[in-house]
Image 1 (cartoon, helix red, strand yellow):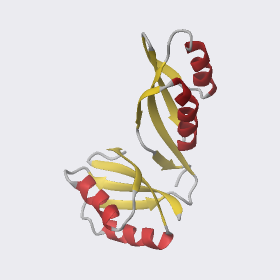
Image 2 (cartoon, helix red, strand yellow):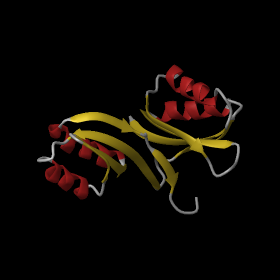
Image 3 (cartoon, helix red, strand yellow):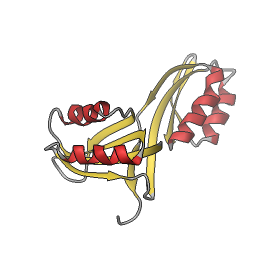
Image 4 (cartoon, helix red, strand yellow):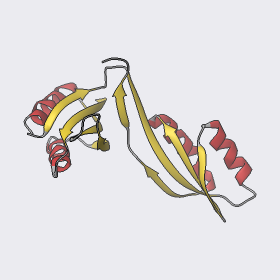
Length: 160
């Protein structure tokens, strides 16, 4: 089983997300991450889906995606050089005495504190999935109160 990062260019229409995600579910693929937003062309959105599966089944999904009227282009970035990023907001229990230690973790990961409460800090971290996972693990001992992750977004490097 291989992790696939798939970019899907679609018409910006109601119901497209549901039809695309439903296709993955019907084929037995779990979507680990999905992001959707405007693309470089007006009226088109880019979906970036991360899933795990074998190449043969993914090839079938790609063929099925093209049968959805609003799907314009499907590209599997998995074997291409790409830049993939995710953003996480992490609210951590942080009494004033613990803050210097937590700030050490934040600085090590080149993250930033975006909100300070009486007994908490909200940290923003951007990077690949492994970086986000590692930061979460290091902040767990302090007590993570809330966590929100965007999911992976990606583009192929260079002029491809």
